[in-house]
Image (cartoon, rainbow, N blue to C red):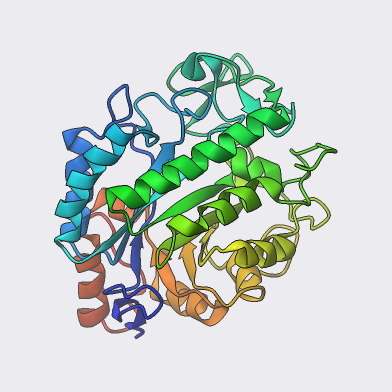
Length: 357
């Protein structure tokens, strides 16, 4: 039985290779500060032995970046001050903590942004129903506001440059607050992802989907703040509005994207899959495999990891760290539970672990 996930991680000096991934909780105040309930959630996970904690998606402004009521925000000195105090409590348990920064892009509604909804191009989200996106009279609505997702406004170049600066500002604040790094949310159809995919980004200017200029500017201009820090990006093929996207390199060339991001300065790739290790729709390889073939940087595998064989498969595919989302959400003692199953249920007849208790 493979116990490698409990070994220390040599890349970032983590006590183990178990990651708490970012999961939106909607447990913040109106101004985006974490409530006591959210603080306790992270303290409990830190106490129970996660090597790396990624704080849930934090909006980089208080307007068009917002995707949820009571979602986390991180864009001013007050946010940094609040998290600085909480980070001292989290790090007392010998874990490292980074924060995921995001912009909702077209996956939000004007009732939350208080103005227009923006994206790389004026293309409406697709019609997949999920927990976040309910169906009402054949219209897809936001689960909180009950309002319909509509066609976004195409960002002007000057607006993109302003958003670049907002990301850079939040990165700078995160390091000042004491985070061990940041993660850019380039997955699930949010704004950064939309700039990478030619099915969403129809621009013909310098911010077209092949250039990666939006991400390049954010990453390269933030490097001076990121010395010896974790600089992660989360990537996926699937989107919140479509879990069944087909991999077509002419629109979304993951190989080229990885190589460029590596060159820009990313030092950790977070592979978000529906089922970690499974081949993507449209290709014979998993996202983790494709990333590994195009970078030597460490990879977080994430996506319904549920048994020992799957972990072994992901190790063979090149994964270095392993994220457990819903399992950890449901069970604050998940790491302890997992270790118990590995040490004392040491046979493959007990192949799946109970995640809830």
